[in-house]
Length: 115
Image (spheres, rainbow, N blue to C red):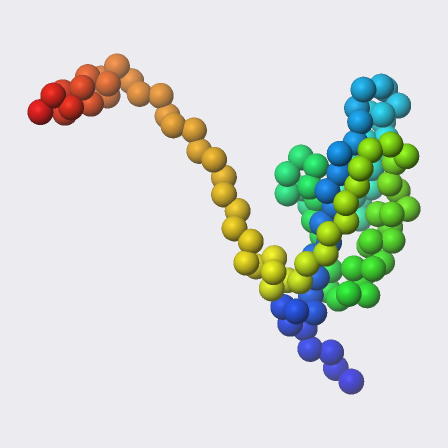
């Protein structure tokens, strides 16, 4: 029997974490946890948010188990599952900084404001 892939069967596993980094040992645990996520195929969405595409719920459970096995003793870790359909409805925005205006551009803007 052939399994048909669709946006409701394909899953995404998100890992949100807040780990302490006060001591050298804390920093080492943080770095090791992050390396394990990257080694297991997770990609960084934001600094403490990683996501991994999983072909099925069964595949998601395998990766979920791997993450659980490397969670550090200190800190908080959240595992969050969504379907590919839900992932596709997310909106990502990237902030843009305004370019600095040159003195000539400021004069032109001022002249336009006068008229």
